[in-house]
Length: 295
Image (cartoon, rainbow, N blue to C red; front, top):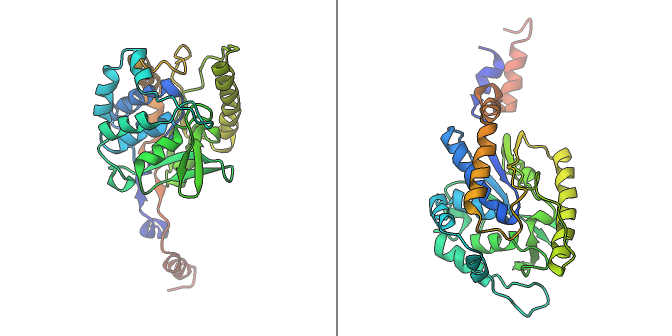
């Protein structure tokens, strides 16, 4: 047995799932997760931005089936509008209280510490113009912050931070998954095939401006923080507000993942196991003793 193998037995790599933003296309994350589960891919931790934070929270809580049941009954724009609480404040069109009520009714946990898997949520702190990574404490305010699209949903106060949508700086949080300790990251980018049609309405200009900024950041992040594999569901015809098109989005996530499942298996196979570092003093002592002339 070599000195390295004596002190550093190989371990299974930790696999992280980075779930990206995408508004109504976020339902596709459910299909991705179901395909990974069916293939026996074990996810150790989840990082989520915006819609990815919502789906990621339900998955990490072991409550994805409950969310899927809700999605299967989500058939009309009327449901979408029923969850909107329009406000007269000057920092967002929506207050977000109805969304929080939805989380309270369907998500069975209230803190990160109650989750079954480690979860990291990405938001954007307007006070210091930096990413905010939330791993502990109250769960619902963190989710609420990550989905606060500027101009649409009012910002969320979190301690001394004023938080908005994490997609402003990190639409697909690969770097957050790495920060959490993932050796291998499977990323889900919901905007890779998104439609780029533009209309001149107030809402259209706001959405187009945000999408343009996020797309540039998304492409830059792919260079500086690459995932080991990126799944890109083809959802170009599902619009920003098409939350009622749940079955199409979920099916899109399922199909895109199944199309690359062999690659995912290869990447997460035993050939990619990472060694644990040995205790350094003992390691170097053993190395010295193994030199020629040492007995």
